[in-house]
Image (cartoon, rainbow, N blue to C red; front, side):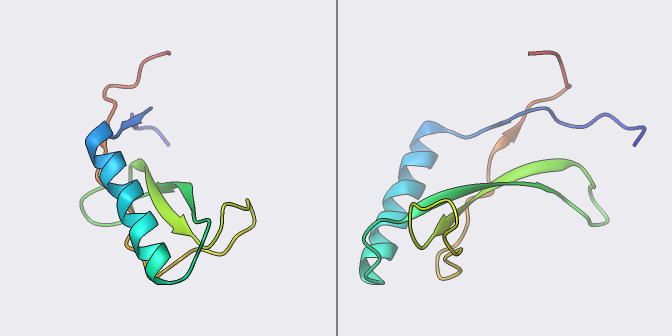
Length: 87
């Protein structure tokens, strides 16, 4: 689209573990035995940014076709890889 965009998103390992523990705990209280976590590729669309991002969202099972669990807040606090470079 003519502008440089991010090429990676890094999550802090402690933050990821905290999110996993949060998903397990909330899912258990909802009687969900095998929750999953889905990674969404997304883009901001607001007055501040239109850049790419990813976020992690809990699902109701570890099946790839499982429904999203909207009762659990997603994780969207990564650090962007900038500037874009070849891997």
